[in-house]
Length: 337
Image (cartoon, rainbow, N blue to C red):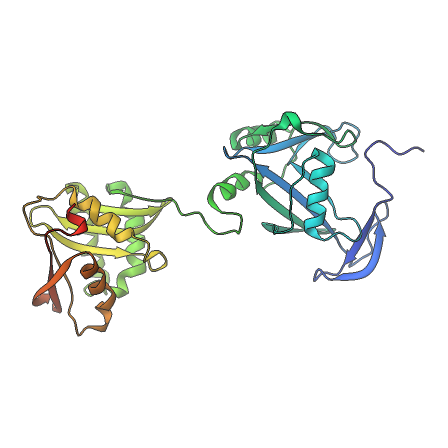
């Protein structure tokens, strides 16, 4: 019997152990995989600057998923290929698109019964009218956003990758090295921010005197609610996660509570919140804050931060039984501009 167009039954694959080590053996695609041996596959997902995914419709004579829509390109690594070479070859063969994968790592790997599947999430604007589609594999291509892909899966015309919708979130939120793209915003908090605010407070409470007990946290929560209603609560967020909080008094021009998540410090977030606070204060009044005293090791960073902004130390005192020092913002500070 003649082979159907697009079949690659004579294709040879390298065989791998469960630890993804090459065995030195090769395997013919058409044969059943030996027990305990695996092969390597790749999927390439190309996203444009609008966070749309380039998808392809498979030919009707394909053995697997005929006529179904798929991600940009996919296939198995042939003997001698490493993962990057396989990805580069599949994109070129199926789309006629030359992309250099030499410095690109797979974004993640999914295990499947027959082996390892490397997924590449590429960001590149492509003119699809200039693509050269592989007649044996691909009918047509188009750009699709997240909502369309989800709809196509519900209609049964898109291969049902259970995680496909998450690709859009990943591509929009992480860079090519897998590092999260921080989308930091700041604003005045309302009651809708109370739960994430208090979740944040649980993270940083050990660094703030007077927040050690549950009773103290309940009291703090009441204070936060009062400030939110008064428009004197500022938050910073990375996406939906609160990473910084600031409570202040409009009447006294006084900073009551300022904290930034340990993982987000030294990024200008505290200053950003303070600048937002300043838009609500009377410019004629001096801004003050009570912070740690000089001999308190816990307060070295806080003192250095306030002084870097133009705060100068003044009289000492006590706050809820804890020794503190008043800092006053001098005129001409960058916060006053």
